[in-house]
Image (cartoon, helix red, strand yellow):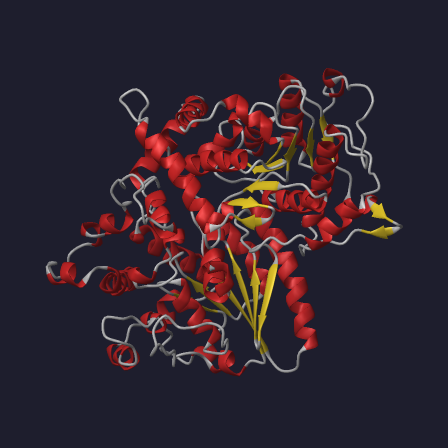
Length: 607
């Protein structure tokens, strides 16, 4: 395995390092000599000059990404509890950007946190309130294809022109106010949060749907003082080095978005975390209520239908209904007049579980909003001839469980409707500190015929990378090493003997690489099964980029998937893939992986 890892690094290095650097390199030099250049953000950008366009903005924004060593230092500080100052620093950045914290009170915010489902909950809320004729602002993370997706006006990513205009207003202001006391520029996510506030204020949105980044208590979105309503979606284990290694610790962080006198809602949680949320609400002085089942809501005697597939979205939809009704009540909308009287916050929280809110009859705008909600990369199915992509950015234990249930139901339904053999393929990657082996174990029951692992790199060639999707917080060595680790975990789980599965044959490698351009790489030729791959199941492969992985899996059967290179061919594919009547591909484990796939599969997302 070590030999294969070095071979892959060497091959990728040949493609991503400029030719002049390769010529001057010492033969056999270590990756550590060049990987830092790949993983370090560009140097500081100059102030906005006439003629700078959207791509200049993205390049400048990328300078704010925290490199790997700084990120590790931040994690150590968080483990020592040095996090409270982060909100004060955020407030300072907001003031330096020309805003007052008090101004954020004008945004009429719905603030949502949780481990899984918070983005989908926000998407439901945004669509519902837009149906009421309101001008909506929606801030979420991460983006899939373009960074503009994080800041939406009326459901659409802000235009390139407006993003460029407002970016330079904020960036230049922060650059001009730097001094020895104020520090430097805010990091990537902080900057985007400040930019979102700036845009929503200048665009005069009626309502802001604000998704927490990580946690809640010390998340930079939590500088807001007076949201209209808060929501907590399903909790699980994630970001343990930042939030804690137990559900209770994580619940404490999530409950940090509660505000005195501001109503809050949550969905069913395990007893321990629920008790923590209840205690947090009591300490802060807010009402916390539990959302009823979605089945309890009916419109004209009919159950509600959702635009997002999967039973797990029922919880998110129920939470969205409560959040939207509360927001409308606060603004005296005739559909939902304000409740009379006030609630005794302290009395309800002597219990270990919050009271269940009563269901109500949703308005037509709510019914249509739930039905028409779209949220890319979550329980998404994309059909291309004989190839069906099942796309879900699940990356936690809970969300992977929901993904597996959804995929098994939908793939079986499709398999029953087609004639001929159906082949199932997993395309997987993880990021951060997640336990990939635990996630992969949950995917084993899907009975994949093949599994492919790749880093979140769109292309092998550095020049072809999408600037919006570049990540400077990890090294190339780390990304590729993770793929091999995931591959090894999968082989162990599926009882495949790794020692006999792979080989690098000089003659075979030469015959395949001869089909591609000089200084280019055929990912399918890097690692392949020298034996008859149709005799071994399940099979697993590692690819150096997303495009190489998809090219091998689809075997040219998706006419909409264009190869990175004109002569890129994959002749080493098994006949089971080439002759299957349907190839079902589950893409999961990372929203960044999903974003790269969608970039390749749907060109409209890059417009």
